[in-house]
Amino acid sequence: MKSSKASTATPLVLFILLAALCSASAQIAPVRKMPFAEHDERYDNPPAAPRKIETSPRMISQFGVFTSYQVNVDANGQNILGDAANECVISVDPTDGNKMTIGWRQFNDVNSNFRQGGWGYTTDGGVHWTFPGVLENNVFRSDPVTKSNEIGQFFYLSLESDINTSFFCDNMYRSTNGGQSWTELQPDEQAGGGDKEWFTIDKTDGPGHGFQYQADDGINCSGGGVQFQRSTDGGVTWQSPISIPNGPVYGTLDVDTNGNVFVGGEGSTFYSIRSSNAQIGNQTPTFDQVTAVNLGGDLSSGGINGVGLTGMLFLAIDHSGGATNNNIYMLASVLPPGRSTTDVMFVRSTDGGLTFSTPHKVNDDPVNPNKWHWFGTFAVAPNGRLDAVWYDTRNAANNTDSQLFYSYSTDAGVTWSTNVAVSSPFNPFEGYPNQSKIGDYITIVSDNTGGNVAYSATFNFNPNRGQHEEDVYYVRVSPTGGGTPTPTPTASPTPTATATATATATATPRATPTPRFQPTPRPRPTPRPRL
Image (cartoon, rainbow, N blue to C red; front, side, top):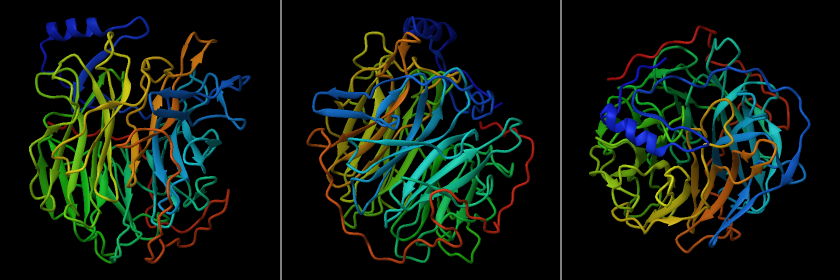
């Protein structure tokens, strides 16, 4: 259980606001600033009992020039009635943009909170998707994160736990066939890490090429606080964890073109934290730069997303090679002081993370304390363009129905384009599994002409339950509009390919190297309160 503190709104004002936001289908929970109320990635239901599977046509949702294609479909391309899917993370093959994979939390039945590592892949630029199943049947998995390296291999980091919640450990999977199948790179629980982990891959030509780095939120395999780990062999083995200064959580990592690793997250405030020697394989990583960052508010949980987060912190670095190369960007949906709803806020650093700009509000509607701009995320294109997407209630009379919105910047985030709605409205409260939220995040990966987005929405109606259901969708966004053009493959760089150590990339077996990190199952730790 994590400690919590009240919103800055008075109890009376907050009560009146929440009463106004309630709908017939769900009641909004109180919004909470950091630290959050409790850790929710726990085994609290057994696997769902077998049931008769019913289907309906897959959803293709058209909104203006933007088309969203359903991802979690059966072998015949049909929607599966009665399941749920959220927390979707997309990766794109940089050598062939037609090939993409999305990982998500798969609930086989909304009557059970038991979740597994689901995934889908496409070979035609996102128009058609195949959902082969889950990483391991009847194994509790959550918090999916996927990435691709420069030669088109996909990686999938997955949190695992058990019925006793006696461990929170990760596994890394690799796919060498465009996400069609995955190889587990170590025995279960042997990739270290923990809850709300995130990872990144060094794609530079430097000494850390192919290294993988991950960070977690302190509920982890070792029980040692908010930690950082490194793999020097392509995700097969993971070195002992290292505490991260100031304990930043619910954030992401990236590597600049010089091989420096930057970790973003929120502790007592937001932080950008650098390790310049993590790229040196025979040195223990240290953190040599810690910068406090003002994003104009705090991360929050509750509110429009039930027991979930209203957004994470995303950190990404410009690799364009031009005037903006190595700019460091941070974006998040934050709860501004005195507010009980969120805005999408952005900052940048042009001096290697020493200082950051004043926060800039990306959502361009007038300041309205009643409207939600949540699940903000962004990506940096190879040419330096920034693409941001988020959920938005600005057009909803009930202030709960949400649409996916898009904005881009071509001047390093100094100015942002007029916000554009790119999806139909959906009710985020419907289709909940027993865990009442639509996940904790969505993601985007950009190329030089647009961005590839994975998000959850409730477009499909389930007549058996009399409500809509959570599914995963793909949509292509771009400064010139929507649609799903066939991406142009780009030439593959020629650095040494990521090391694969002793693992064999096949459809089903697991590699069994001797890991350097061997966690011992232990009781679930209680994280320290963050002030």
